[in-house]
Amino acid sequence: MSSENSQTKWGQFIPLVIVFFFWGFVAASNDILIPVFKTAFNLTQGESQLVAFAFYIAYTVGSLIYMGISVIIKEDLVNRIGYKNGLSIGLIISALGTLLFYPAANTGSFTLMLAGLFIVGLGFSLQQTVANPLAIALGPIKTGSQRLTLAGGINNLGTTIGPLIVSFAIFGSSTNANTTASIESVKIPYLILGLAFLIVGILLKFSSLPERPELIEEDDSHDATSVKTSALQYPQLVLGMIAIFLYVGVEVSTASNLPAYMESKLGFLTKDVAPYISLYWASLMIGRWTGAVEAFTENMSLLKILRFIAPYLAFGVFLVVNAIANHDLTPFYIYGLVILVLIGADMASKGNPARMLLIFSSLGILATAVGMGTTGMISVYAFTSVGLFCSTLWPCIFTLAVSGLGKHTSQGSSFLIMMIMGGGFVSVGQGAVAEIIGIQNSYIVGIICFAYLAFYAWKVSSILKAHGIDFDKKVSGGH
Image 1 (cartoon, one colour):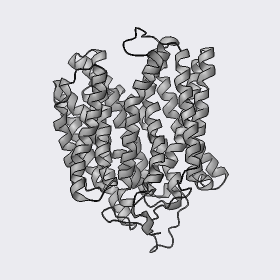
Image 2 (tube, one colour; image 1 turned 90 degrees about the horizontal axis):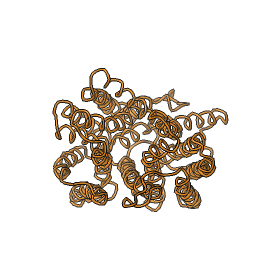
Image 3 (tube, helix red, strand yellow; image 1 turned 135 degrees about the horizontal axis):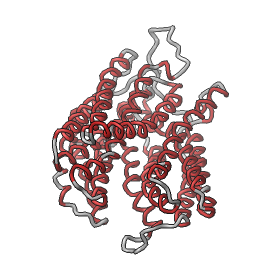
Image 4 (cartoon, helix red, strand yellow; image 1 turned 90 degrees about the vertical axis):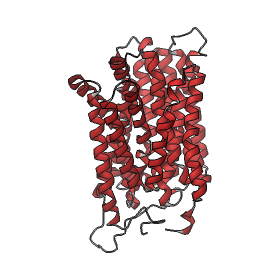
């Protein structure tokens, strides 16, 4: 690996993370659109969930289209057009999707609205395929997963403020008596978003981002017969695809089943559940901000200080947002102690993505088991803390799964993005299990997901070491 890759390239990385912010902003804003569309179009609860379905299924369809084009042109699509062009094209596709909101609102068409969201998601699918490996490549491989964690932290900033901004744009201020929204009011926020997509797409086109970044190749010099023609010939990727499916599944299903648990078992009112769901997603931000500090400095004493500052800074963002929303903050101060467990786990991982995946998956199992075995607020905090332990799993799995793929990296990345559909399948699966054994016991589904992730962490280390890739060393992988 060249010496110029010994430092993170911040000038290139900062424009890149803008797209991570967009993904979070739009995904979380869908939660605001669901009740608006439900009322305006007189939908059932099941029909209103088509908003989320249209958006997430677009990732899978986008990956399939990507693979189809790659087969037709007999070359990986991103390798052909370049990483920077891929990002710009993805943003333009998403911008075209937002344009559909205009005729959809004027004609009152739910189908057109869904088509618009689907096209936005198609664009995101291409952006994700390119941006995730690019974040890893913009600096030393040892801190690749930390850069992806940092990008994820920016994504969570989008999930935290997106719903507030879209809600304000549609309903006006919280003191306003307007509690219902017309479909007309959805037009302007999404057209502004489309304009932002276009502007960033143009800026990225003229940025210093590389078209063909330096990627890690497996060191197969000892084995002349192992010329691989597809990403699916790498076991770290195939096992990683299952890991991404189950990771997104446990992350989404833990949160989506929490309101039903709190209402049926603890007697919470629906309106009082919101701050706890907010705390769950904020936990992901807390964990990612903590996991990202190694991308900034190698100074050990500064790292120790930042490891304590970063999570409580993120926790502070959560408290401020909820204070603005006039929620009672008293129940949340105790959560500051749970964050200490996260800091300890982060230090124990020493920045190695495989070790981090093993430690955090094990803590995920423990947190879920405590939630299942206790009652009252202890169980709520236990389930919420699953967000802390999910926080760094995406970058760990992604980094491990694409390590050593070389020219097959973008193809492998596309396969991983396709597995985001696990968010829908595992949530529905846990819901079905809940009807048989009860909502609290249904969290056994989460334990099974974490158990596989712990297995993957153990297995992938030996796979990569056999090919000369070791994350405990400063630089790895032959070129």
